[in-house]
Length: 630
Image (cartoon, rainbow, N blue to C red):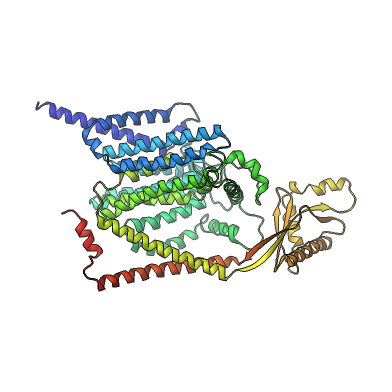
């Protein structure tokens, strides 16, 4: 019997190492997108094999009493959160307009969610959440190094597709846009922002353990990731990477380091490809001047999101069904104001996608899943703020938030990479019951910030209302047609869509400050939209007629007599509007932020005074000491 015990322990140790190895392989394969990269050359069932290995590993892990004991209520909560989201997709599929497409994407969603649950169970059963973080950070660091090497080689070393170059281009880019193993720089960038906080957490853990050399190693693994973020040339990725730094400082308990953020922003903005592109993006979105050189990627996103919004308005509760956006694009192309030449297949916004395809139900179930994960991480950080595991919880929380923010610019794709972080979040749930004092403090903090946010939103709303003037808007669509008799010249003159610079040039010729009108140019459709405002409907009609007359006169004066004229193709459309300058939005945002901060400070001051006037009430510190284990 004495010899059997050591032999049993050796067997258990080998079994645990094997299970951890399967977990690491599954994480590395998904982060590196091995199955999709390998599919370019052959068709091995790599993902199916990894899933089968994971399922076998789960069975072996559950056979062990010690591993099984590590599973707790957070495992069940993770399963429940996943089930809520899946239920929302099932409900949306009931009324789908394309059953085949919806069934296909629903099956893939089920597989992805099973993958999430396998990672969750293996992480908890082995007790190795830090190993998962190491696998994520190390894999992204290696892929980033390959990307840098490919850049230095002039784009000739793709390492079999692990350091690919995106086909999409952009304005003002300073390098080729590298997409890592994903082929798309935007999705690759969304994944990179998950790895940055993991590397920082691993560095902090090593430093607290007294291993400075290992701490420096993990810190330096984030350097190639930062360079890879730049090489994506994705403005959304650059902005979200900055947000990751801010969130990491707050979540990891280092708010004093936020003082370095203004300096970092100043340095980043002078780097070519960062400051100038972000400024150009702001100009494209918010400039009051007429612009005809807007980045095509911005136009594509704008057009697709306008379509998604119209789809949501038509079916607001359950949507058109999962994976139906692409099939509905031909029916909505002519209904939106923004037209593009490229074919649109996705809304480039996760939340717009959810609203269009699964309605309010789909969005709510997604937010419930993310909200539950966020709450688990917040409880983990609050329950033991001095634990070394706080760094990993902070990194995971940072990853969840930054991925969610990055998804404002991207649709749902490569979900399994994000599923690893969600599984890690559920695995980090506090093993011991959370003390009542901590729950009360979290509720107080949540309530305080909710009141502050409501006050700030109310202040912003009042600012918008007080700086708004009611008016009536008149709009009419028109085309440019050749004047005079029809001949061979007319066929060329009518072909304005083939000459993309023609309509913008004519719009500039027509514009006159004496009869101001907003002239929206649509070179794709060959249409001009004249828009004016007036104090009432009659005034708006008069202003529109005057603007069209002035436009015809200016064409005669500047292009030549009997060359071109303006022909209206729609009736006058009247619509009540509220006039406000674009600066009003900035004023409202500033006032809302100021009121929110002042409200939060006032509530905190009142709470402290209330505790002073009622000394019999325990303070937060006393609550914590009372809830802490002896």
